[in-house]
Length: 232
Image (tube, rainbow, N blue to C red; front, side, top):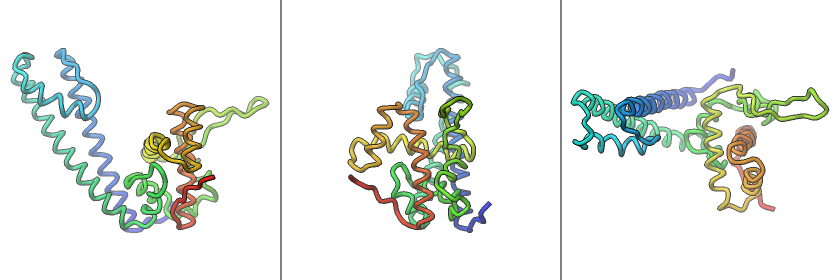
C-alpha cells in the first residue's frame, strides 16, 4: 500500500466524514418517509421532495397528525437541515483543497471528474506506480468486466466489483454526468460515449465509461499531465 502524505490523509479524512454525513442525511429522509407512510401520507423520493414536503405537512392542520408525531417530524427535519449544512461545509472545504492538490487539479480535466471524485481517486491512486497499466488500476477498482471463457468465445458478464465501492460509485456517478453532457461536445471520447449509450443503454454505458475514465485517470497521474480531448 503506497504511503500517504499528510495532504492525502487530510483529504481522505474530509471525504470519509462527508460520506458519513451524507449517509446519515439519507437515513433520516428514508426513515421519515417510512414513518409518515404508516399514517397514510406518501412522500416522493429524494432530498428535494423531503425539504418541500415536511414543512407543508407540519403546516397542514387538516392531516390530523398527533402533537407527538408533529414534534418528532419537526425534530428530524431540524436534524436533517443541520446535517445538510455540515455537508455543504465539507463540500466547500473539498472545493478549496482540490485547487491546491496538483493531482486532483489534473484529474478535473477528465469528463465527469469533479472536486470530490478527483480527490478520492487521486488519494487512492497515489503515484499510480503500483499499477503497470491503466487496465490494472481499473481492475483493482472493480470496473473491468468479468469473463466466461468456458465455451468457444469470451462472454462479458458484468464488472467484478472488487476494490473501493465508494470510489467506484463516484466514478459511475461521474460517468453518468459525462454521458449527459456528451451530446453537447464534438471530441472523440464524447462521440464514443454516445455510440456506447446507443448500443448498450445508459446504465451499462455508464459502467463501461467509468472503466475507461479510470484508465485515463491512471495515465493523467503517471504522466503528470492534464487530459487532452482529441478530435478527428
